Image 1 (tube, rainbow, N blue to C red):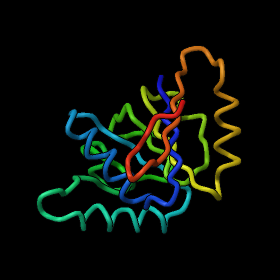
Image 2: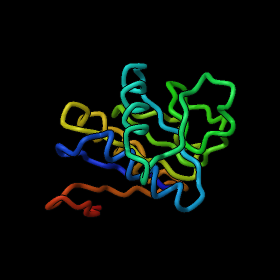
Image 3: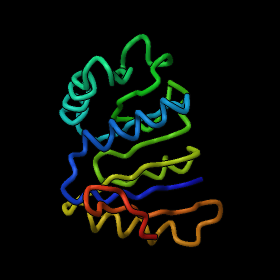
Length: 145
């Protein structure tokens, strides 16, 4: 299982999520996006709809009748009714449930840096878990660890 830590460094979280979701959809994979606040999910839902006709990202907000059909599902719960094998943690709050997925994307900023450092340490040496750390450098993502 792979955990990618993304230090946002001023990059808009919605744009980063859209980029990751777009890449996964291009690989015909599904994604569960988790955040602890409904307002964050509503904002992200709006952003994904507003990507424009050429870059629309099919998605839904959990709780609907079509959750299982959604390639990208936005949820407050780490369960994946859409059978996603990828989980994106959008609010900087680590969830152990991420370890049940094939890959987790953990986004954090300055406000959640301490939580990210703790998660990094807790996952260190854990069998079957590979960690990678990404940061912005001149507008591009660079793998630093």
